[in-house]
Every structure is written in C-alpha cells, then in structure tokens.
Length: 388
View (tube, rainbow, N blue to C red):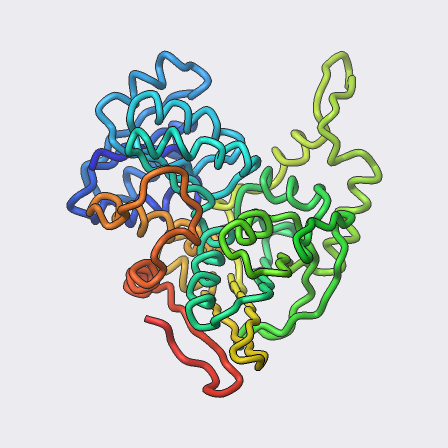
C-alpha cells in the first residue's frame, strides 16, 4: 500500500522506521524541513523512501503529491486534520491521525466515508489511542464498565535542557492552557486549566507522580461508545514547579497568541516562546526518565465492584537505543504504525471515521508487543500479568 507520511519529527521518525520494514507498504515522507528529511533518509539506511519538501498550504502541489498514494498518516499537528481528511476523501485515500482538535467535526464525516468504503482512523497515538484500546480490553474483562481514569505518567530530566518537550510543544502548551473537562453522569463538567491536582501511584518503576486534569480526546469519545460509563477523566504528570512556571508565563502574556508590536514588527509572544524551545528530536538521547500510561477501569459483576488497571511504560534510554528518540514519541508513533500495517493487510474491516475503541484490541496489543511496547494488567486478585 503506497503510504504518504506527513511530518518528519520525532513521532514521524518512529512511524517511518516501523513502516519501511513492512513489505506491504511503500513509504513517502513529506515535510517542510529539507534538512530533517535528509537526516531521516540517512537513518533509514538507504531503504527505498520517497521524500517531498512541500507546504500543504499549496493545495495544488500537495494534491499532485497525493496522487498514486492509498493511505495518508498525519504525524504533523492536529490543526491539519480537516484539510488532510478532506483531501484524502477527495482522492480516495485511507487516513490516520494521532490526536484531534475537533472530534465532533471529524466524527460527523462518518457516514460519507463509510458510503465510499474508506477508513479514517482518528486519535490513534499513545493517549488518545492506546489508552482507548486499553479501555476496550477492560470492557471485555468487566461486564459493566462504569468509570475510567486515564493517567499519563511521562516524566524526564536533562542536564542540558531546563524544559524538555517530548512531543510537539505547540500541542502540549495548547492542552495546558485550555480548560479541562470531566465526564460525570452524562454531562461534561468544565474545570479551570491546570486544576485537579492529584498524587497518583503508577506501577513501578514509575511510582508516585503529581498529575493535573487536562482536556483530552478520550473524555469525549469513550462515553459515545461505552454507554454504561458514568465517569471519565484524564490527568497528565506535571511537576508543581512546572505548573507554577506556566501560570506565571501566562500571567505575563508570554503564552498569548495575540500579536504585539515590537520595534515595528507584530509578533506573537507564544510563537517566539515555542521557537526558542528545543525540538523533541533535539533532546533525544539527552534525557532520563519514563513514558507511562495507566488506564484504571471500574465495573460491576453481579453487584460486586471490580477494578483493574492496564498499563505500559518505557524508559527514554531504551527508546533511544531502539529508535534514536524519546519514549513518549516511541509509544505514540508505534501505535499508528502498527494499525497502518494492519490496514495494508486488510485486517480492519469497518469503514468510516473510527476511533480506537471501535477497533479490535487484541491484534493491536499483540503487534505492539512485537515492537517492544509491552502491556500489563493489574488486578486485586491476580496482581500484575502481561497482556500479549
């Protein structure tokens, strides 16, 4: 299957490394940064990969590049989702992305994609993505799933960098500045940004971490699919020191996107701030710590409350050995790469706009384990067991 991968950052590199080893996929890479594309070509050890230096804002040029491809993977930013989905629908390509800025808009396209026999798999990264798949597995273990808590425990430290972005800084700070939402008994409860502080104990070796509520895709998609759910939330590991720093930057206007006049030039303070941060691929090999995902699910069976936790983790050093990246990028990129390979093998039957919880989870978890993403389940009765 001829596949066009848009975005050659850290996550894009992980996806590319996996897909070039798939005999059923012929891969093309597209990015604005020619130097970055050249780096990836060298790292892919001469494997046959086409590269395009292009701006998708040039619709005519981009549509020419799309011709001859059968699948597109968006590893750039979520703000491109609508344009890329529309282009894929127009030219008959299947589509995968990793996160969403407007889930309702994307899901509203389901019927026309289904009628055309095309597949658009959205929100297919680590979280959202693997988190949703874990919920689907948990629902198979609990007869009536009632509550889901998603906890992202990634953390890192570096001797070289004070701030270590493990994925797109633009997406990360956008999440931090937006109000958080929690699903409670059929309604959405809006919470202030950077609220809901909690000490959460992740399975070892991650341990206790401070997490804060964020607005995240799982909160909006899981209740649509699992009608028995009464509660869904998402929290991310953030140090108190970092949260205080973000609040100060926001108060000073440094994180504002509103343009200000500086020496005769109008600039966005947020754009300047983000431009000064290192890229995730710059910090690869220079950080310590872990990426970790835990999904805590509660259900009832014959009136008895049952609880289990599905989780995965990876050290940044291991991710660098495997793929010259950090663990967050590795977990995020491996999920869509696995599903893209499944599409190339006709292993996904349903057409339309699909969220991860609509897919069969067992084949995905099995293929992930073959690519060093190990999954575990922890129950009160049996302790920690591997999922494979």
